[in-house]
Length: 119
Image (tube, rainbow, N blue to C red; front, side):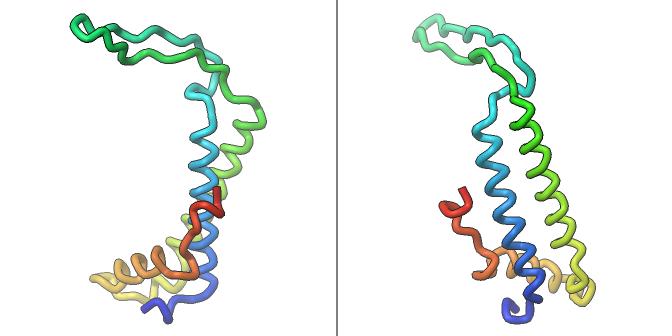
């Protein structure tokens, strides 16, 4: 099945994998709150003394971080739509062919993502 996938669909899937990976890296680097907000202390367990919960103060996102998050999310959204509405999908049987083709596309060697390279 992997041989029958259109090259433009494979390319779109590869770009989607890359965009999702970049988006995940960006989100992990952002402060926990979009706006500046004070933190709060955690609770001390009465028997163990272990502190759980609580948050440190969040400086909030910069306008640049906010703009980049919105831009990357738009790219992910557009590529998701491009992949899921590609004309090739209309040629597949709805019973199982569609699912098999989607799984083949997600794991296609040319669409696979080198996670290290994307980050």
